[in-house]
Length: 577
Ligand code: B12
Ligand code: SF4
Image (cartoon, rainbow, N blue to C red; front, side, top):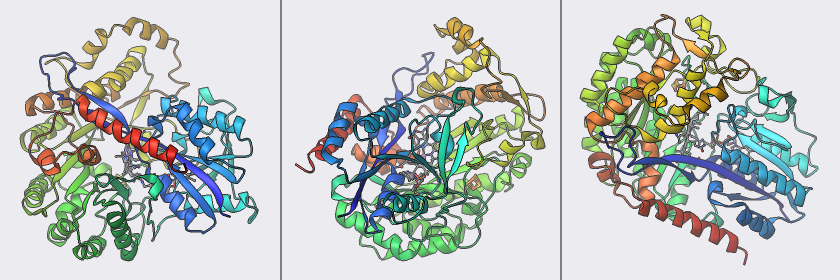
């Protein structure tokens, strides 16, 4: 009999809801963004890998947020036996460094329940960064980084087939005031069990996953990035050689998902999915032989897209890779050079427009065009003037989505496990200094994340500081925050090398820019490629949505999505009946 394990995944995505454009309102309240549960790819990858050993029966439970505790307890009753050796939690992006999100609190409740009711079961938490799981409690093992080799070592130990895997025991690894004395037993998959590159990341889904044909699944072409941008905290960076997967298993995975479930649309998990022309051509050649046309969306490098136009564009079009997210970061040349993205901004701007036209014109039947840009405000050499100039170009020429965020410099880099960016490591090398964060700064930040993030439009000539003044609980919050623990909690504010502005100024600049842009364009900035699954599952035509008119997502749509999730849970609970 095979050994048994479960992996529960809790991932979600902020999807646009509502019309999202009410310029006359202080904050727009007709539209919204809602956090919706999604499947977690990492869990299915790990489950597939373990099933392939022939020794393990691993079942994945998706959409954790959609289950209430009682339903999950009921689910455990139908699955757990004395043969269940461990239960895994696949944790995606949380803000655990700052606070325990509801999803983390829920996972902790479940862990407690499992520990009490099924005391022989080990709890394994897997994530791409330790920072995402530091508030998980009563965990036996934290498996950090690509976990395929680490989990096999651990499973072999659970079954008595191997000695204890190598672990690192850390106490309060981020030196966090709230987590004093907290101990973590870590399987470090970045260094001790590296599963990159991975030539066969084929992920298989099972009947008991109830995949629907209009879902968008996530797929990997390669792991790691060949570049080393100074602000980037991915791992691994600076990868050399061909780190892409084999063509055969790419073909097998596409065919399997098409034949078994009817799935044709994918998000790519690659950090840079256009790293090499050779592998784009390799994957395009596979797609040309398929009896269906897939659609891909993924992160690419804008400079490579533009430099290698002739070489890559037709391959990308044949592959169905006509939806792309690009981190452009800046249109100021000196700033770009300082972060290792030194491509000429003028060539970038011209190239972007040319690529947009080409992809839109030549995409295959069944595919749609979408390109979205992300930018960073506050890089070295950036001034208000250069920011405004870049912004003017975007507003004039680039009407697809742009997402501009202030530079983030992490102050939580002491764990020794997670990758940190070069800027995080030593901001002073780049000229950044710190100032203490005032109570007002923290309220502005808090307000931004809780309100602006979901509302999006400000009154004309209205700033974050004005919004905060109108915030009813503001006085109370400021009093609370005045207890002053900014330094202990590492919540200081960076000051730009020029001394002319700081992080809060950039938060304000980006907020005003985005708000103003929404008003100018007359539509919300909500159309990005990662939303493909949302529109597709709700039955919207993707070409129409991405290229013509953004649909107004109503409560009916949201209910429809929850309807899928309710059916999923019901099917899951009844699977063995
Ligand atoms: C695809 C994707 C999505 C998809 C997720 C689809 C899905 N089904 O998983 C969608 C669009 C829904 C999404 C959502 C979000 N995303 Co996203 N997303 C990605 C992307 C491109 C790939 C992630 C992925 O699937 N990787 C492939 C799988 C196989 O890897 P993995 O999940 O890490 O799993 C491995 C390990 O973590 C480990 N592991 C995982 N689970 C388990 C379980 C066990 C038991 C074990 C042992 C091991 C283990 O082993 C796995 C296999 O090697 C990454 C970029 C990147 N390259 O990481 C960004 C990324 C993770 N996302 C990011 C962000 C910000 C978000 C959102 C907050 C966006 C938003 N505003 O809503 C939300 C997250 C909300 C939430 N809290 O859940 C950031 C996170 C930044 C950070 N500092 O961590 C990233 C890094 C992109 C970026 N640079 O901005 N995302
Ligand atoms: S920002 Fe993108 S291109 Fe630069 S190192 Fe990170 S993943 Fe690679």
